[in-house]
Length: 409
Image 1 (tube, helix red, strand yellow):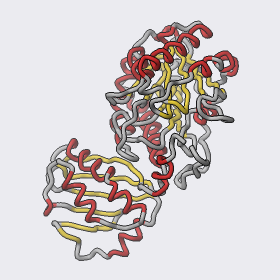
Image 2 (cartoon, one colour):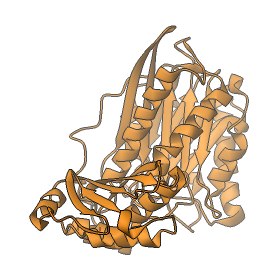
Image 3 (cartoon, rainbow, N blue to C red):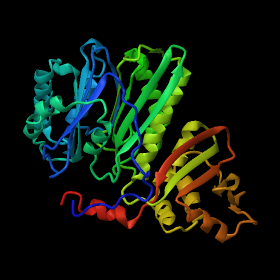
Image 4 (cartoon, rainbow, N blue to C red):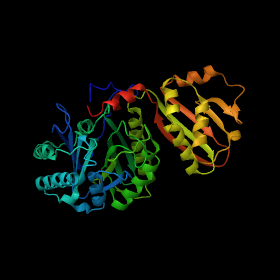
């Protein structure tokens, strides 16, 4: 890419202080996959006994890495696991060469660690359609293994970035009847962000002892209300991967009924998903869209995503224009049930429209004031039933075009 992308104005002040998760260690290296002078490969090593669960893109053109991870994710936890990730090249739409790259990397890591290749998980992110120079990654495997350290999770978050402007991390500590457990996660994502799984790479780790099927059930359910409720540009990636490892090092058992753990995990996943939106390519506004009164939750989600994905709405937000007519447009086009004369629209706490027309008490300067804020709430009630949904998005600026117009150059 040409030039350095300015850090998002929505970025946190600093990377959070994440706890060390016993049973997992990290390392990074400069492999020169695409970028020069920066670390672009990350290795996470999980101890024997670690359960691994995953959620992946539903793209019909998903990468060789995704297909390989999907095939392996239900494997035997007794062997431990390794996750190796490169940035700069997605290894997608590379045919049999892509499969060969995955196999070569897995075999190299397996040979150096003693793990079976079935317990090596790979992810690649970056440009689509170019062969992955996997020999550069393999050449760094011994260096990665020698450098692994439980405290290097921030370095790992930096190494997986592509057009991201800041590394993303989140954590939680939970007091359970059996003791204390910790959760820490990192993510990358900035563009090509839309649900299905969610378009990004995410790695979450906990020292809780969780049986694999229970871990998978939690992860799948929570993905639907976190990562699958965000959108930057409506484009679903070929490479989306969310992997979670539970090392069991704390000795504290967690089941699918452990509500405190599930709520803490939801918080970590929601935090990471919001950070991805706040780092949306060119983003200057973080937007929550809440729809209520729909005929069903599914209809509410359809309406919410129609609003969140509308280029007309997103550009109006970028220009700080309280254009409520575009919200009406998005509801009408979504395909879900709606009645024009029952709609209620709010920008923040301001009642903008009701009963099929602008509210008689609404003043344009009120809506304009809301649009000047960095975090904006758009609420719609359809007046049809009890269906609700909340999704998160960002504005669409000239910055998005600039970043993507020269992405490969």
